[in-house]
Length: 73
Image (cartoon, rainbow, N blue to C red; front, top):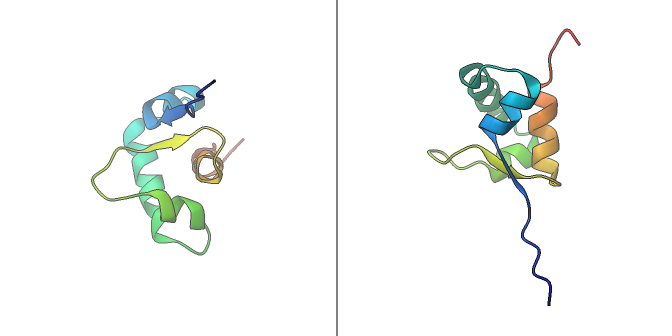
């Protein structure tokens, strides 16, 4: 019996990968969560006062990554 636990990605890991300041990333994510029409999965999964973390293969992770992607890239 193989019990695979999903891989969790934290904001710190994502910021290191994208070379972003965590404070700026949290600000962007908070703004994205407020716009539930544009980012429905991100808004659905985030609970206030909890750490920013996602299951690696989830739609919410994809939305978070696209939200934090560099604007001038």
